[in-house]
Image (cartoon, rainbow, N blue to C red; front, side, top):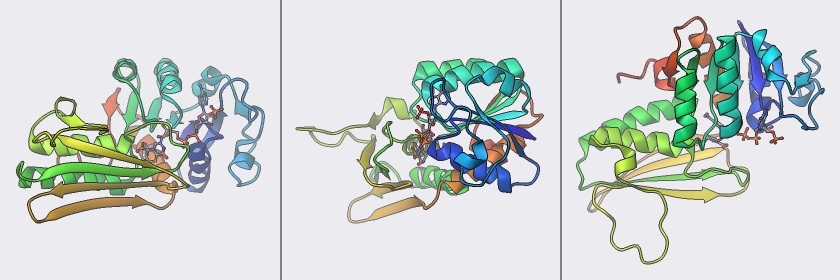
Length: 268
Ligand SMILES: NC(=O)C1=CN([C@@H]2O[C@H](COP(=O)(O)OP(=O)(O)OC[C@H]3O[C@@H](n4cnc5c(N)ncnc54)[C@H](OP(=O)(O)O)[C@@H]3O)[C@@H](O)[C@H]2O)C=CC1
Ligand SMILES: O=C(O)C1=N[C@H](C(=O)O)C[C@H](O)C1
């Protein structure tokens, strides 16, 4: 399967190039960065620290997509919406790891999924997706006497909050409790907040240093707490999940899928 990495010079872009190079059944056929990037024209393998692959970074996505079977996209919401249109035009699989998308961005991605097979997830790792299933089960098993809080920490460069993973875990907790996350969540607290609203799912965000990604879901009751957590030690876990998603999506009918579909965890 021929894969394109967009945002090829980024933290995830480089991890993806390395994992594609090590994985049977896939090859890097193209690499894309934005116009004006100092990495345009450079060799993608060299950027990723694995030596020359003879794939030059391009700033012209359309011809690169036309020669590929799938695109791996960990960029920005605006870039992802643009790439979703191109992937749909080229009828290739689009694997989206980008977080921080607005509801309008998500609508545009869903529209593109009428023509392209899109897998989108706030976290592509096996561990976090399994954690999501466990969170849903715990939230369903413990009633509203247990308050649910999601705590996350990431490196100092991260630009969106709460993280895509925190929102994914919050959505699983809300599903376990039988409501929509948007209807009952507290994303920020500051000043005189008053007591905690009953049943809400709360979020807390920490940023600093080089932390790859850490998440805790705390179910806090009277006199006891259940704490479910995931620690990402290396970006390879996300890249491996994205390549797995591309292989799964190849030849599948157009639609918007999640990593739970890829991993067979959707009905667990
Ligand atoms: N779902 C998951 O499992 C994971 C998701 N992520 C998410 O992936 C995204 C990227 O993270 P990370 O790699 O750390 O970020 P980086 O900033 O390191 O990488 C993003 C790359 O995309 C490039 N880019 C931006 N706009 C365009 C464009 N229009 N065309 C081509 N390239 C573009 C950037 O270039 P420039 O710097 O020049 O703007 C940069 O090289 C974030 O949203 C993050 O939250 C991260 C890890 C795992
Ligand atoms: O920006 C990151 O680095 C990460 N982003 C994703 C998120 O927003 O949850 C996934 C992972 O935690 C790393």
